[in-house]
Image (tube, rainbow, N blue to C red; front, side):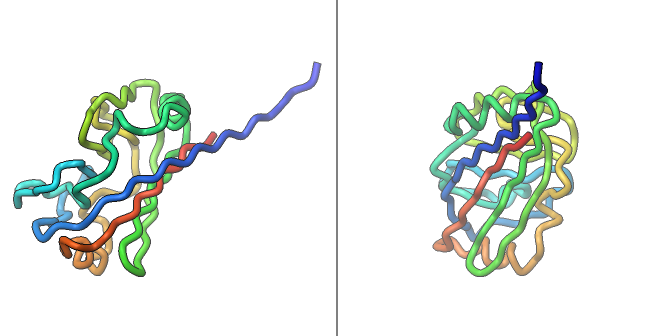
Amino acid sequence: MHNLLVYMRVVDCVNARGHPNIRATHKTTLEFTKDKHLSRRGDCIVAVAADKGAADLSEEFKKLATKDGTKISIIIEVGPLRAEIHGYGSSSLSFTHPTDMVIRKSRYTCGRTIAIMADTAAADLPREMVKLLQDGGRKVRITLVAER
C-alpha cells in the first residue's frame, strides 16, 4: 500500500466594478455583490455589479472550499493595484446566497460567506485601492483560489 499525497487547486474568477459610494471601512468583513447600486451604509462592500454571487461559484470551488482547512486566497485587481487576502474554507459554508459573497475575519458562516478567518477586511485594503474602487466605471477582477 502506497501513501498518495493529493494536492488540489481550484480557481474561480469574478468580474465586478467600482462604485462612488464604496467606503471600505468595515473592520471584520469584506463583500462583493451582484447589486448594481450601493448606499453609503454598505461599508464592507468593495465591488458591485459582480457577475457571480456565492451560489454561482463553480461546483468544484464550492466542494473544495467546504472542506475544513482548505486555504482560500482572494485576489482583487483594480487598475494597476492588486491585493491578496488569505482565509480558510469550512464545512459550515453553504454558498447559497444568490447575490453576495462575504469574506470574514471571524469563524461566522451564513449563505453569503465564502471564506473565514481571513487576514484582511475592507478597512485593511490600501486607501489607494479604495480610491480606485470609488470610480463607478472601474473594472474589478476577483480571483478566488481554493487549495489543499
